[in-house]
Image (cartoon, rainbow, N blue to C red; front, side):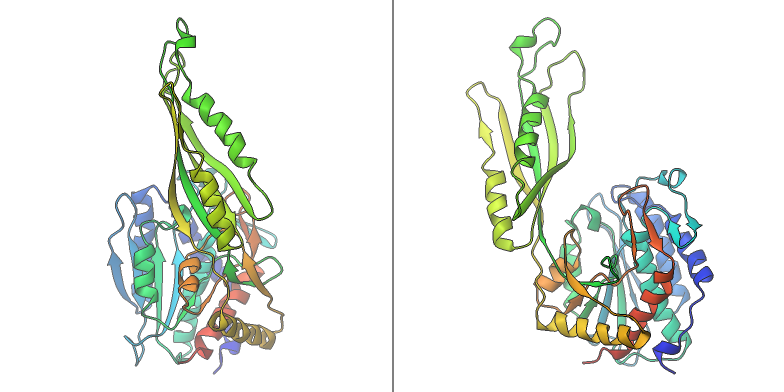
Length: 378
């Protein structure tokens, strides 16, 4: 029996995926993420995987690894790597309930990336049920902080990825039914404006507003965006009492570039914004999590060619390319471990209240993953 004879019941798969989507798991809600990890750990155990629960980084949820039965288990094989944290806070289901509407299915995190993570697991399960043994042992790794740049799990990811020959990442597929063979470089920054307090009613001129400082810098930062490097501010908070001139204002910024050299120049420009004024006010930029640029090497392109051949056998053309937005494949691909990303589902609207998958891609992408697992060898 071959992978291309596998059958997938879309309705049954959606029913299983519904459980994952309705277990909301925003990154910063440790209890919620751990409930999701409980669910996936139970699903792994139910299909015969050996489950390892990995305590989470400080203030973040746990991670889970599953190793599937195989005569060569323990040898370098294939790691299917996914994250189960989302950007959607608990309660988003009220505004974005799990529902199917025609060719689409909606839900928080369904595209980024619980749908792909679920499809990856179902590919492994379908092969086992059909008695199809993969040439290499297969493991899965589910992490808890990808949406904030994987600051707490990067070392863990590289530790586990280094034990394998190939990395498969079911992040959302590229528009046009493609996969991802490279990713842009991304840097995050923490911004702090420190003003001088005063009473906003009686002594306004004595103060120096940190919010005012931040607003001016925000405009300057976003105006630095060019074709080579983009800059955006996505989080901001400041002040506590409306009758007080605010002393502090904090923000987070993101910069992205297609080439590492362009990002490095962008980092220099951001750090150069730090300043201290004669009146004691300050603006400070500190560098946060950085994802290196991932450019496809020979190992990744061989993976893509294998996937393209499998897609051709299944009757469709598989394209590839680099993509913006970060992924944990930034780390593995940049480290030279053959990695193929964007193997997940097709859809649109991720990180919004319109997040959805194309239902037909659920079986299609699961079958593609199954094909890769059966064709990859030492």
